[in-house]
Structure formats: structure tokens, C-alpha cells
Amino acid sequence: MFCLDKKVMFQLKEEKCVPGARFMNDCNGCSCTDSGGAACTFKACLSEEPTQTGCPYGPAYIDQCDNDFSCIDGRLYGFTRKGCLPGQVSQKPRACGPRGTLPERSNRRVFCHEGIVKLQSKDAACLPGAFFMDECNRCTCGSQGTAGCTLKACLPPVIFPEGKCPEPKPNTFGICAESCQRDDPNSCSGGQLCCSNGCGHQCMNPE
Image (cartoon, rainbow, N blue to C red; front, side):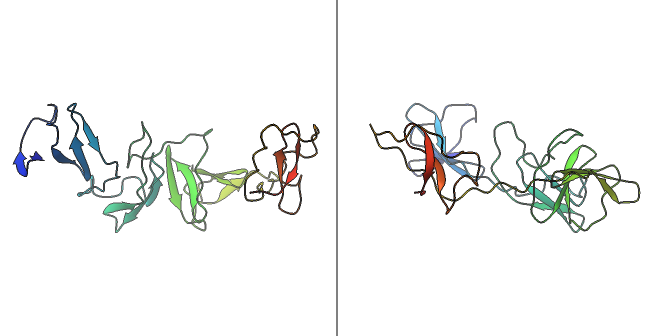
């Protein structure tokens, strides 16, 4: 169904659209081009109806598009809405395995259970057989809901000064010496960055 010259008209979906016509594709508006193709907006549309009732994946999980799903009253999931990359499926649980990495959430525990990435509060008893990461340490949940973790000494996160390096000026060169290291946040002081001078690297004020 489409609109052309203020008239509502119908055609098969596989047919080329009529130039100048307008129609809706879910929540996205589309306009037909002179070549018979369609140009549409690219919004993430909310489902009008829940795709299923109940919460078969537990109280909370993460889908392939990195959305957080939380069970509401044991009936259906409420969730955040992020755009999906090609190949990802919205609402389908993100798979995980023994050697895989897990996404991070600052206020909740992300863990792998029964091959699905799930969520729970950090003070909750973990599910038997699940595993999660505590900084750089891997934790495995026992049958009593307690976790056993490795005891590695985790390095603090690397924090670089804010800003970006100024671009070297055309046809100018600095001293050809490496007076700092770009991958070392402590290589420069006073909020400076290790930047290229056109030949080597030296500490500079960020832009």
C-alpha cells in the first residue's frame, strides 16, 4: 500500500515502486526514486507485540545486538534498543563458550550460562556451572552458588590524557629522536601527549 498524488494505492511488494510514491516499511518512511528503487529512513523499530510470552532465558540476558533484556513479572522481556550490525539478530541471545570473551557492564555481573550471555546483580548467588570475569580473573560457579576465581594480579586500566595530538605542520620537521613512547600514558607529564613532530616523537600539549 502506498500514497501517490494524494491517493492510496496497492501493489505487490516485489514490484518496483512508482516514482514519487511514499509508503511505510514498519516504522520507517520510504520514497520511491525515478529508477523504481526505494529510499527509506533507518530507525530501530519497536515491536508492537511481544514475540513470545514468558522468560525462557532467565531473569536477564544480552542479545546479539548488545541489548540488555530483563524479565518483567515473569511474562515478557523489557529491553534497551540499539541498532544491529549486519548478521546480528535482535532479541536472539548472544552465545558464549568456555574460551570466549564476555561484554562488560559497570553495575551488573555478566556471565555465561548454558551457552547464553546472561545478567544478574553482582551480589547475587551465581548459577552452578556458570562462569564470569572479575577484572582479569575467571570465576566458575560451584553447585552451592559460590564462585571460585583465579588469583592473578590485575594491571590497572591504562588511562591516557584527553585530547588529540596536533597535526605536524607541512614541510616542517622536528628533532629525529624518540623522546617519549606513544603507548605509555606516563611517558609525558602535565596532561601532554606523545606526538609526532614530523620525524620523531616528543611531548606536546593536546589540541
